[in-house]
Length: 309
Image (tube, rainbow, N blue to C red; front, side, top):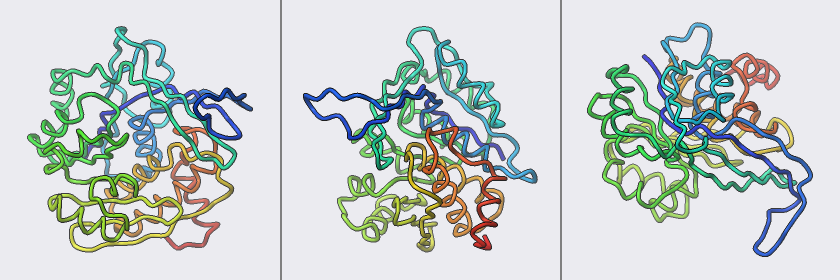
């Protein structure tokens, strides 16, 4: 079994602010840092960092497009143990980037410029997917231009498709391709938009009826997470490790840890618990990909919590 994440690679410009900028305002930042980012990159790093030394996952691959200004992103992926053979260089646009404000409570607001992420062609998708086969996992988000084509192409090859429909777009959620996705990973705001249901329990039940072929993983922030695995609904609490510093990347950390652990043979509930702790550690640190813990770090925290996971 192989994992491939075909998604965004971004340069994150992070500004610390007391409060988010409002219309007509100019504010001073109390700090600035630059990090590797993009939901695709973040999820891939999480998938790789979560992998155990005895894992049956035969490789974790990242596919996507950058310009030469994003070369350091490839170094970060390789350091995490990711195969980067399918990352393409395109000089027709800069590497995608994000401007992120982080306030005193650790909350964030983000502006994303797609850059090279929006230049993926169908021919490039076909060429890359030739290297994968039925039963391999394809992880997708909604930060590149080829998402719908990727879903159709993966379905034709019988890949297992995991979609995080973020950033949310009406066009994607109204597209018929959602009827052939195997897993949908989303938060409470996104599921409310899709189903029209305010309460998570009702929204998840309606989601299961709307997309009966899909398993659904719902993250609820401090209220934990909920999963419908095709047969039953499983709930898991959230873990708070320390004061929240930056929530950027928490959902990606959760996704990466959940699927790596699940595919290594744990139960859905155990995968949720470990993913929840990984997300809790991630928000206690600044940045996105660099804040995601390694599997060794997670084990250390598990021992500290005496959770028995």
